[in-house]
Image 1 (spheres, one colour):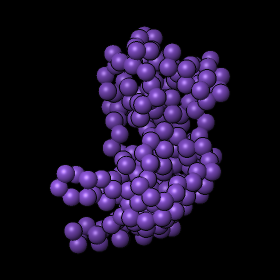
Image 2 (cartoon, rainbow, N blue to C red):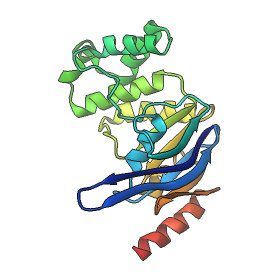
Image 3 (cartoon, one colour):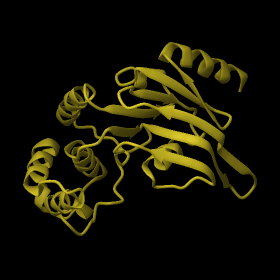
Image 4 (cartoon, rainbow, N blue to C red):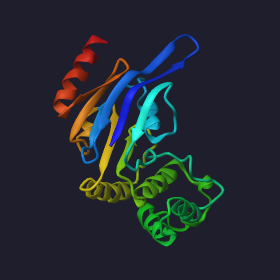
Amino acid sequence: MLEFENVSKSFWTGKQRKVILDRASFRVEVGNSIGILAKNGTGKTTLINMIAGLEKPDEGEIRKHCRVSFPLGFMGGILGKLSAMENSRYIARLYGLDPDYIEAFCRWMCGLEEYFDMPVGTYSAGMRSRFSFSLMLALDFDLYLIDEGMPSTQDAEFNKRAGEIMQERLKTTTVLIVSHQAKTLEKFARSAAVLLDGKVHMFNTLEEAQKLYDYSETES
């Protein structure tokens, strides 16, 4: 279970204070994949980073009683001077997993061929994304975080392979995805929420959430 209790988060832009969350409380149960609809610029990535523990709230408490992934596309734990092979084995040891298995899975999954043994710092953005996504799928999490704003890959074969594995994982794990488009959430979400005016409004279905989201669009 993931729980936010009276969580607040804001930034000073230089001209005004931008509020992301204002004493927001909500809960995500493991086994119930959820999509969060949020307009561009309202703090989708900040919310994902807070769930992952990469950013701290100004106030309130975030409680995690499950294993939460790093966000898709996050490269903070990957060292550019090391190869994908070295990084995968290093992170496997950090998580107490079999380095041989994690390396083999990532090597197969991302399909980087000889580049897998070259420094990650030499990769293109798409290659880095493929490796990061492969590493996320190789590790064992209860809750996977996906931010539509993260870098993506244009490799159709990789996307197909990754999509099939993610769909299989959905049978036993949970996905939390944030997006400004309801259609993006359809593949993953069983329930939905709307990030609006600093609050996370929870709904049982995507259709219910979309009604509030569409209404807020007409009012803005």
